[in-house]
Structure formats: C-alpha cells, structure tokens
Length: 434
Image (cartoon, rainbow, N blue to C red; front, top):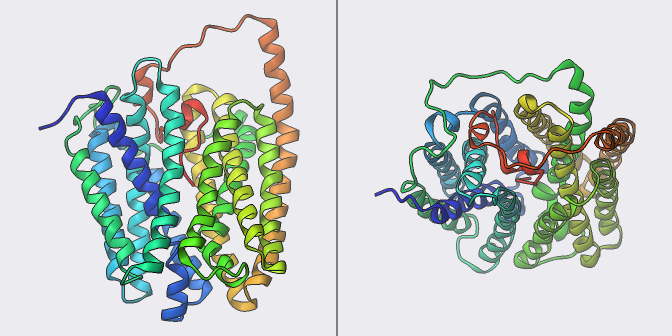
C-alpha cells in the first residue's frame, strides 16, 4: 500500500540519490584486482569506466524529462532496475565484455533515477525547506561515493570473493531501496499527465557565452573524476605505497567529504570566484597526484584527494550557478542538460585517453601527461571565468543597485515538472553528483 507521508518519501528519494552515486563509483576498489588477476590493461580499465558516461549521455538527452510524465516513482524504479542489472553483471563477470555491459547499465540506471530522485526530494520537502533539500542532496551524494570507497575497500580487503561480494552487497541494498520506492505515490505534485515526447536541447545564441563559461567549469569537475575514480586506487597502490584496500578506500573517501564541505561553502561566494578558485584548485590537485608519485607519500595522496574534492565541488557548483543565474528561467533546463552533456563527454574522452598513455608509458608518465593537458583546460576555465563572469557579475550588481530587488519566493511546484533534467541543484546551485 503506498504511503503518503512526506518525510518517508523525502528520505526514500534521498536513498535513491545515495545509491546512484554508490553505483557510479562501486568498481573503483576492484579495478586494480582486474588488472592484477585478469591482466587487464589500464586502457581497458578506463574504457570500462568510460562506458558509464557514454551510456548516461543519451539518457540525459533523450529521457531527461521522462519522470515529469510517468511519475518520479516509475522513473526511479526503472533507474534502480538498470543499476541492479549493472551491479549483478559485475558480480557475475568473467571477462571484460560483461564489465562493459555492466557499466553501461549503471549509466542507464543512474541517468533515469538521480534526476527524478533529486526533484522528488524537493517536492517532498516541507514548505519553505526546498533549499535545505538541495544541501541534503549534496551531502547524500557524497555519502554514496564514500560508501563505494569504504565498503568496497573493506570487502575487497577482508571478505571472501573480492571480485564478487562488493557488488552482491550493493545489489541487496538496491533491492531494499526499490521496495520502499515502490510504496511511494505514483505521481508527485508538479508531474505532468500529458504524453511524453523527446525535446531537443536548445541553447539561445545570446546566451552562448554564458553556456561556454558554465560548461567548461562544469567539465573541469568531470575531468577530475576521470583521474580519481578509475585510477585513484592504482595511484594509491603503485605510487603512494598503500597495500590495504580499506586504507586506500578511506583515503579516497576524503574526496567525497570535501565535495560536501566545499559545495556548502560555495553558496557564500561570488560565482566568478567559485569558478576561478575551483579551476585553480583543480590544477593544484592534478599536480599533487604527480608529486605523490614522485615522493611516494600517502600523506600527499590524502592531500591530493582532499584538494580534488574541493575543486570538484567548486567547479560543479560554479557551473550550475552560472547556468541558473545568467540565463533566462525558460532556458535553465537546456543549459544544465547541455552542461551535463559537455561534462560527460569530457570524462568519456579524457579517461580513455589518459588510460592509453598509462598503458603505453606507465602510470607516472600518464599522470604527467594528464596533469599537463588537464591544466591547460583548467587555465582556460580561469580565463573564461574572469573574461565572461566578472563583467556579468558587475552588471548584475549595477542592476541590483539601480532598482529594489523583488522579494524571494520559493519556485512554484509546477515549474519543477517542466524541466528536462531538474535537480535541486538547478534551483539552489548545489552539487548533485560526480
């Protein structure tokens, strides 16, 4: 029997957000085992990682507004089913093809579930508490990544069947969450009842400079993820000297903790400063990973993970804020969906390219090449932030001084149902995922 309590629905939707991020990062601690036990190359590992964004991109483009029509519950259940299939494929995998298929199903599932779950958290919030839902969604997202690192590390290090049990545990958790999702209301407030149809992304010509500035900041966070998630455990093992998977997972989980802290801190900073500091932090992070390899220090690896998490949060929050603050409300959805598209394309290209260099020339050479190439990209973000966002910030300040600001209002519930890829982050500039 479906329940109608907003508190239960709120936390159930939050659990779906956490599961999505846990699923996205769940193979991180087993990648080194595939390389050691199956003799899989780093190039192949990064292609396995990249299968996730490659599958997720068309879901964002084609099915981004599906939950507005079939309901949040149905969209979340479809997403959880995709995640469950992906996780079980990893649990049963006997070769690379099953791992590639598993990652593709994970991308499909996360793409269907996380947007609808994030919006459901806002819709189940008490009146006037939608902004809090965005902050909680940020923390829950980071919790999902931390669970992937710590639970995966513990099961990989101390439990039997290190290539299987991690995924079987996650599959059981997904099934349990799906049980509670099935008891949610079919439609929440703001959902549409009309027939679903695909709507192409549209970026207005006059907002193109805003889109470019926001999307390259957005993509910076995804490029950092292309280093930390597929190669983080390998860096810890081979360069930092960690021989314990749980210790490695704990060190990597600081990445998630810093995402939460700095995502909240970003709300109090000017948007141009968020973007510039985030890009500068990304440069520092990638070179700290290089320095970790040069001196073989676990302490430096910890610091690199922390700085990467901080930079990720600022880049992501900065990109979302740019889209929402400097574009017309009717174009927010297209701008944010376009940002996700650019970000996942950057990750889908950057991770395999980095993996190819590591396979051909070694991990240290790969990190040097990646740090150099990525730093150039991050420098472009800094230039774009100063050249585009500072004038926009000044113009906005001038306009605010010229006329009194209207009173703040909560977004109308109906507006949430009309977006192509709505999340609390679109309304409140939070960080929903890596």
